[in-house]
Length: 235
Image 1 (cartoon, rainbow, N blue to C red):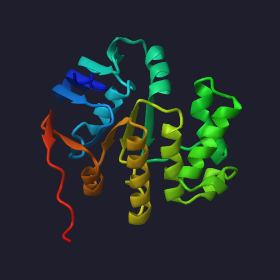
Image 2: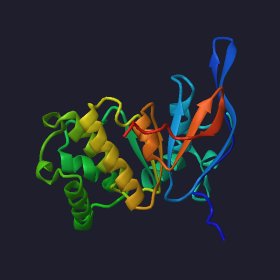
Image 3: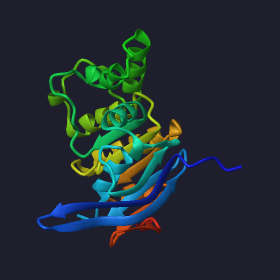
């Protein structure tokens, strides 16, 4: 018997007021994402990719429809309930690293654990172990401004998964990096998502990201359609 999808989008619509008119970003979106699956989300600028990610993450509410994550209907939760649910079950990675400059690397990693009430030695050990797995164990006491862009983004990815979330959401995670740093972050992102059996949605314009995903969805003219991943470079 097939397992229940981790993420279910049901009749999702989002509109915004623009002056006296209303702008509909998308409507009637339906999709399911399985446990352990990685999905690349494509679409032109302004198509609503980041808006959809915010709805899936419970940061915003849809105009119509439902977002269900692991059996919990996020659209029926209060703002505080959504915040607590997101804090425990969702990891977020953005193009801007969003590291706290006044905290060291290890303190940035510990923050999601502390917000979930985990302040014991085991939590610190888990954070240090993850830091070692991303090759930055020697930078635990370093402040973010002393790291390269690629190193900062690797820390941001680690911070997004340190609390063992069900769902990882990434919005253009390699967009501000050079090709080499972007490739390392990409490898880390998909490696952590698959190794831990999480589901992941990654918004991207990058063909390499799309090729790394299990499935590709695209927002086209306000609809969500399944696409074939872009072909790889010639051998």
